[in-house]
Amino acid sequence: MLVISSREFRDKQKMYLDLIDKKEHVIIQRGKNKAYALTPITETDRYFSEPQIKKRIAHSIKQAERGELTTLPKEEINKFLGL
Image (cartoon, rainbow, N blue to C red; front, side, top):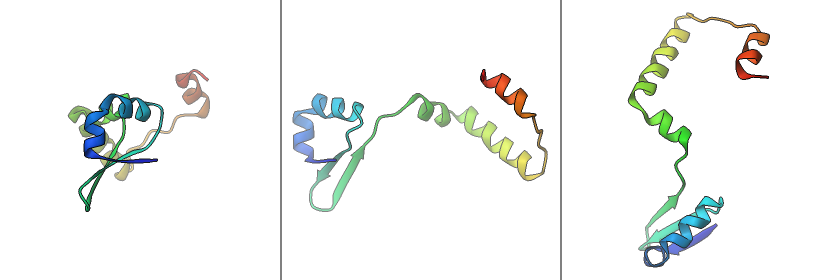
């Protein structure tokens, strides 16, 4: 893990972003009491931030809480997953 100043990050943004892409943890220290962790956003993060997806997940959770579930045999799940 690297802890750098905001000035250092500003001066060498590309280098630090490349390190983050290589799974290095980078913390930017800003003053004495503020710090920020940088993490890459993945396709999964983008998918789950979509309002439609959030709405469908909330709907599915409510269905599960009401016991409105469908159980699939393991073979069918594996077929769906291509296993």
